[in-house]
Length: 243
Image (cartoon, rainbow, N blue to C red; front, side, top):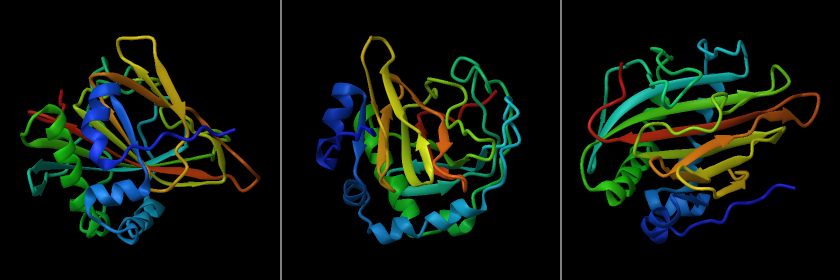
């Protein structure tokens, strides 16, 4: 049985994030937060049908496709940044940390869509409410996890933090799979929650300093296989992570 998350109203986001370190918005809540329509969000989904394979998986798997892009969000201004490698220290990613990982850039059809700057600005405002107003260095990751190998691992590195201020995980699509349960744990305590995101454009927000997160593997529900698509945005003060 799938456990559904408890949704937070957008106006409650600051207090809920401060209280428990994470919050989940429904698609309707996300639209309210970003000031967009669900049709604008759905228009982004085609961008997940043209993701190249992730060539950096150290477990040898073929289950992950992705694109990557970077931005600086300063108030209402959303500024693209020249394409750069994604880098994390081993402290935060024991499997793929310490590597300069170059992924194919996100396509203009996604980053120039009407909903894109609305999402980035809205979450910049949320992060500023949490940490104080400042420019935010944003990394955007499009992921498709599929069942090519019979099993797909959304977080092959296991339960982790990302070394940023805020992590936003959008469920874009989920088709023909079982599993993919989200687990959120206190970084400095015994408590945790688990639930499964099933509604396209539901959103998980994480205070990365306070919680650890992971998503369990997916398996096919039938012979045709399936996939799970997500958009991950990370917000970090000061600079991008770099070697």
